[in-house]
Image (tube, rainbow, N blue to C red; front, side):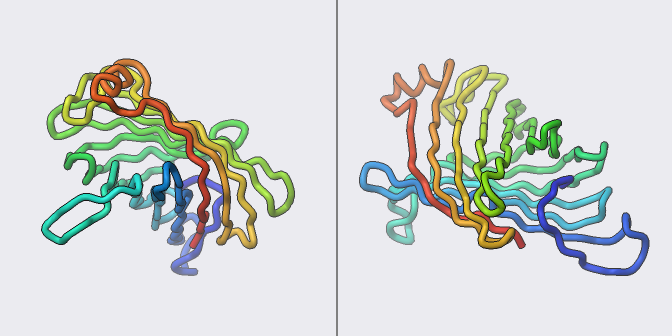
Length: 235
């Protein structure tokens, strides 16, 4: 990804722009306590490649702290869990175009084609925008944006905005047409090193539009606020 994150060379031969690098980054590895339970969330990506061409693996998910029954006994209840494998091509100095496959495991199994753009917008906002087309023809999208504010050389405040949209109603996912939900959050981290940074923060999640109306009819919570703590890791 065209970012200022740390990255490691795999080889030292050849021209600089043909050298192979790799990077692994956990933006979220956190605990979200609420109502006597501890939810867990991760958001990570890894890539390997040259300045121009890379292979990305992305994954994210959330467990609300509950548990369900299965053939293996009590198992964590995941609200969401997904994996992506993407080919990424540099299209400008700060942006990559990405295409690949997304597989959701929870809340239901779905396979999607993925098209997206990731990189640094003016002002050094990090953006990750993606469009999805499922095996059933469902079209959806998401946008993630965050920005690092350096309070000191080691103390960094990261505001973040995430929003999802759907082109049609998807009853299996309890989502409606249009904007479905968003999350506003802020994380304050202390960088012992660039590679290891614990953080604390706050997150507000809100369902909107038709999706909020569906949640109200089904007796689901439409808005949540979390205090959170976690680690940001780079390899």
